[in-house]
Length: 185
Image 1: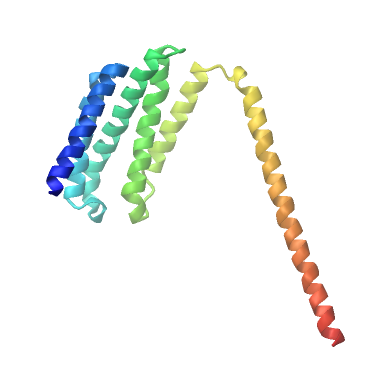
Image 2: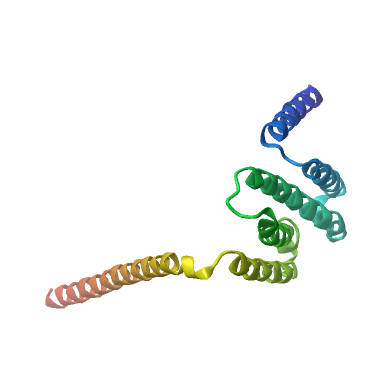
């Protein structure tokens, strides 16, 4: 019974993916990367998942292929509704996707062993994404938005600090009042 349910759900999702690829004109690369990632994820989980540290050899290509599948789908969708050149978007999305794949590796596997090595390539790839996005999108256009967000952040921090200071001072006054009342009795 469970196998029929699993097979039915799989067929429904496959049908939705096929329909969405025709509707949104998603490239064939999406399916290639998705199938490869499903195979590697399956091997990773059937061999024991995070219980064995040697299974990370299956998780790395699974995560990278999964994120590349999502990025190729995103690039093909954005190319249909794009304001920017697709080549510029690929320079930003691909390193971001691979960096996110290393973050998934950290979450699923290495964080259980207190190992932080996937965070280093993730940080490098996110830095490359930031540098490419600065090259593609002129920073001058975003400076007012960045200043507004920074100002709101500082306002929120100052308000939370004032509230915590008021709570601390009121607690100290209550303690003083309580001590005086105990001494007069």
